Amino acid sequence: GTLQLGNGGTSGIAGAGTVNNSGTLAYNRSDAYTLPVLTSAAGSTLRIDNGTLTLSAGSTLAHVLLNGSPAVLDLSTLGATSFGATLGGFGTVSGATVTAGSGSILRPGGDGSAGTAGAYGSLNIADSLTMAAGSTNRFDFGALGADVVNVAGNLTLDGDLLVNLMAPLAGTTQRLFNYTGTLGGSYNSVTIPNSRLTATVINPAAGVLAVDITGAVSNLVWAGTSAAWDLNTTASWNG
Image 1 (cartoon, one colour):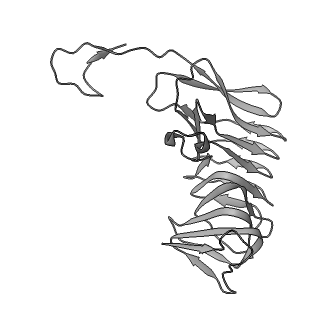
Image 2: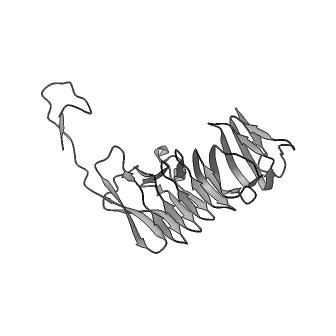
């Protein structure tokens, strides 16, 4: 289930004890609030819809969704934080360095498959960001918008990059990161699922990391000898 603190105003508190989250904890206040120690069960979600939420020392996190450009997660009391699940959405993580740990997904914006301009957006990391081995970056790019991550510090890469194209963007360059510090490391793999196009990571200017989308999109022509076809083993299509 979902427990919501606040309804867009300045009221709504969690009390003084430890907050145990096994579902979705939603924060929706217009001001700043410090949450008591938060214990997050595997699979649970902390969703920040508005305002600034500061986490107390000793808190743990699973999935984190920033649901609006005024949404801020303040880690200054918690300190350097490693996420083990999903960190995504529109908003800002501030106060400490951020590591996307093994098995985690860093996903700016919303779901590009929604087919609306509001499905894309910016995720801001107000300190350094490290993508650890085994982590995944996912970016959605389409005709109506694009995802981007802004890092106010160093950017260190590892893990895998997943580029999700919602439009035929061959011949374009799509920005992944803006960063103010140094760039280190590299991705283990770069993939565009269900596409003949190829994405190549480039560093076109200081403080910018992007992908070049190359290749050609062509029509498929039926080449099978019967009405039966499959996706993996039979050469049923040319193109």
